[in-house]
Image (cartoon, rainbow, N blue to C red; front, side, top):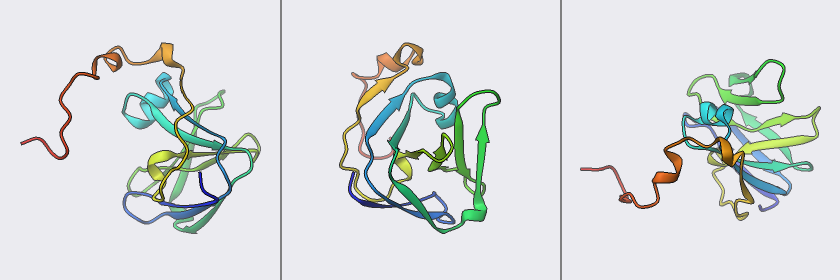
Length: 135
């Protein structure tokens, strides 16, 4: 990913800039990530060197950690959008790909926790693809 990337939440209350490169981009299919996103997987970018600068809305950010685990999610308290999170005692930046407004120039590295994927996840390749809302 480029050296700087802009991002925001859905309602625009939280805005941020990330400086630095991402080392990996994982699509995680674990049950916790599916619960976090309400989808088949979470698409997260990871960096051990990048930093996040909160431009606005830092007071709108809440973080939830699953007790006795490393699983953590930050989100906007106004709209619920997933937001970047600094984990592992400040050594790891995890940024939800959907929160990034800039172009992402890193390709996903891997599907992880693939054995935990939803039972319906593998049956979607041949369904119709529509470029807007269905009529």
